[in-house]
Every structure is written in C-alpha cells, then in structure tokens.
Amino acid sequence: MSTEKSRVARRYDKWSGLYDSVDTFPLIGRAEKRWRLEAIEMLDLKPDDIVLDVGTGTGLILPWIARHLTTGKVIGIDISDKMLAKARGRAEKVGVADRVKLKKEDADSMTFQDSAFDKVIATYTMTTVPEPTRTFQEMVRVMKDDGKMVILDTGKPKKGVARAIHYYMRPFARVFGLTHIDRDIDAIASGVKGIEKVKEKRFYGGMVYSTLWEKTR
Ligand SMILES: C[S@@+](CC[C@H](N)C(=O)[O-])C[C@H]1O[C@@H](n2cnc3c(N)ncnc32)[C@H](O)[C@@H]1O
Image (tube, rainbow, N blue to C red):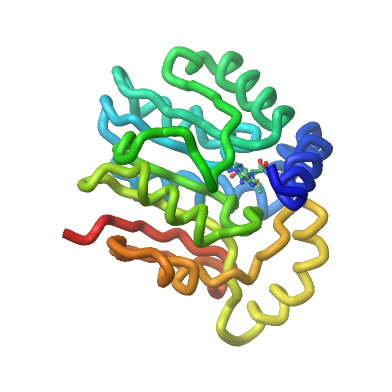
C-alpha cells in the first residue's frame, strides 16, 4: 500500500470511534441520513442484488441496503481495519449480518472479478481516495453491464453563499478525513470510458451531490 493510502487508513483508524458522532450534529445528521437514503433509492435495489459499498467506513448505509435484500448480499470494503470493525459491529447489532460481508480491500485495486456486482455505491469516499479516477475506473470494472452505480459526495458549488460556506468548511472537513471536498466528479469520470451519468441531484447549493451512473451500450 502506498504511503498516502497508509496515511488515509491510519487517519480513519484514529477517527473510527468518533466518526458516527457527526451524524448526531444538529442539521447535518438529519440531512446526511436523507441524502444517504436518497442515494440508496437511486440504486433501485432488487432482493437478489449483489451490492458493493466502496469505502464503507463504519457501515452507516449497510443496514439500509440490507433491508432491501433477501437472497442478495452487500459487500462493504475499506482500507481501515478499525472502520471495518465498527461496520461489523453495526451489522451484528441491527441483525443484518447474514446479508453483509466486510472485507479489507483497496478500492484502487480490488480483487473482485470484472462485472461481479449488480450495484455499486460510494458515499463520501471519492473525497478521500488519493487517486479518484483509478477508484472510479475500478468501480466501473466490477459493475455488471446492466448495473447501476451511485456516488454521493461533496463538490464545489459554482456560485453564491454556498461557495463561500464551502471555502470555510474545507479545514473542518479535512479534520474528518474529507481531504478533497472540491473534487469535480464529472472531471474524474471524464477519464473513464464506457460510463455515463444518467441522473444527478445537488443539495445545499451544490455542496453535496448524488449521481447515478450506467454503462453505455
Ligand atoms: C469519509 S469516509 C466515508 C465512510 C462511509 N462511506 C460513509 O458514508 O460514512 C471514507 C472511507 O473511505 C475509506 N477509504 C479511503 N481510501 C480508500 C481506499 N483506497 N480503499 C478503500 N477504502 C478507502 C476510508 O478508510 C474511510 O472509511
């Protein structure tokens, strides 16, 4: 693993105990839950889907995905052992461990076969990975030809008050490991062939976005 990735893993190991507390902050917590649920809705989950959650962290979205599945499974991957341990604890606590699998994997060089997943999701992962185009490329590789991919993350608002708020939020976000909150998902995707954006929702003046991607036919 590169030095940069080891640094990311160590940072999240360190934050694993406190990470979920962000979701209890007034306003942010409620909005976060809504955005995550909307992102999951975009996946249009089927009971037998095999779903990949890239950079699953403490597994916040795993129970919400698992409740759509019967014979299907959701596989959460991360490079931080401690975040994965939290995710495992959550899956057991809420009784979805039978539909959840957790694995230590680098999103940039996953060991999964091509087209292994019906659905792929990444929430707030693209802002943390050192090589986002490579991560995006890998996510496309492991997704089936008729699959769906959803990316929920932060972006840079184009104008207005949101742009100013975004500017001052950067140091705060960095503390939580969101090191690149102004990455442009379209620029990242432009380096990858065979995929197109079919839906986009922007929240808070564009500070947060949810995008749905499908393979081009
Ligand atoms: C901001 S957290 C998001 C966690 C979760 N998806 C959520 O919505 O709360 C980013 C996660 O991505 C993981 N991550 C960063 N780089 C990664 C990589 N190259 N491969 C796998 N996971 C990675 C981090 O360890 C961290 O748990």
